[in-house]
Image 1 (spheres, each protein chain N blue to C red):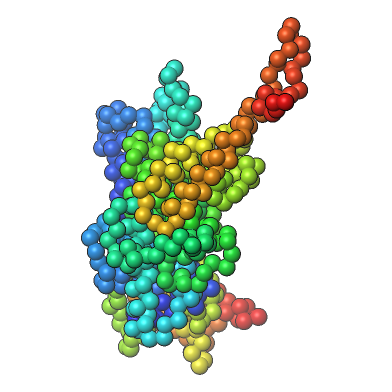
Image 2 (tube, each protein chain N blue to C red):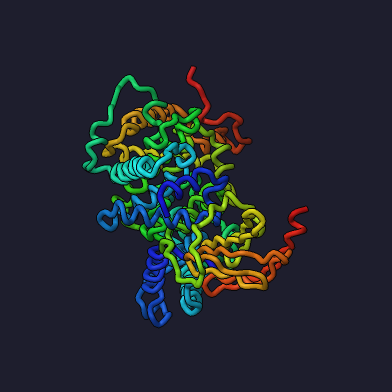
Length: 264
Length: 269
């Protein structure tokens, strides 16, 4: 099956995940295996990432010839390859990545914009840009906890807390919205969410970003530092909710919590 | 039956085999409760991403039995356990219970537990399908995928692509016909088991039918008035005789079979 025909079918489909396009995905996977075979473990991951990128980017493909389709796929594959190495945070193999401009004057949106040349179209709104940034950071955080925490149950719990921290500190969700999004039964308390945000940020996100050579890293580190300072002035929700009985002699509880008391 | 991701399936085979041992007895395998709970949680991944049906029945039973014991044994932490450690243990147990439900036949969207609240990044979804996540991480990700339509579609794409590439099969067709683009035809039926779609093409009065299957297996549509024109792995194309207004027969995808009875005139209305 010619590559152009395969990619055109994926581009023109209403739903690229439809069963009727199984042949196209198999054909594309086979093409990647033949054309770009790398060292085994690297290749498997890069192939999967490439397929996922094609799924979202195919609609924008304008190639009309076999050669241009191959060139388009090469760019997507290169981008997936860079993502693979970026998530690992070590020495980057791609010269192109080393040349990635780190312009201090770039805005948040410019820095966290799409990472693939195939997705050249800039996200239409800030939400999409933040989603892209969160995805990249979470990918990196997963690698970080995999490298630093040995017990599987602790690794997973740390990553869950890091996700809650991303929801609060990067996506800007408030606590009730986070509780609703977690969809747990029973729902977690506000104090638990507060703790998860703190733990996720300090124990996973901040250290994961430190050794990460990615345009997002420095910006996000500064942003998280700001969130930390912001949280430092607040009282934990459980302390706000549990008034202390400060009256001597067993009188009723005080209606004013310690956390909200202001100095004269 | 869902075609499994080969590497994920191999990972689960290894981790569940280590947990319960070749004899099916966890005690003889020497596995600790954490290893058993991790294997149990891994079952959530297979339930959602595909392949749990392929796990042998005796392995499933042994894992469920060992899992119940491990959940009871790990129910309480020590006196020195910190609040964070207790939370980690509780979440791990919840994921293992979801695995127990999955092994017991619960549908993926009925499973609950501490799911990933955010969409799975490409790298995590890739790692899950390649068997590169541990059992708890796989379960949390899978629980998210089970309840998230976009992530489920992304996982479906990887599953379709993971099957061996389409290779032409020998058929007794007089002339080869190129694989038809499904978008140029009309979808007339969708099958769940085997997962496949039936598309009708009208070639200047000649009605052609194509089957696109999710599994990369030999596909045949057998019935009165049907004549095979082309077969590829996961694909079948054939013609329907002019005097037939119904497609009546059996659809074969690998070992799976489904009855087909479609009234084309009713569809035209």
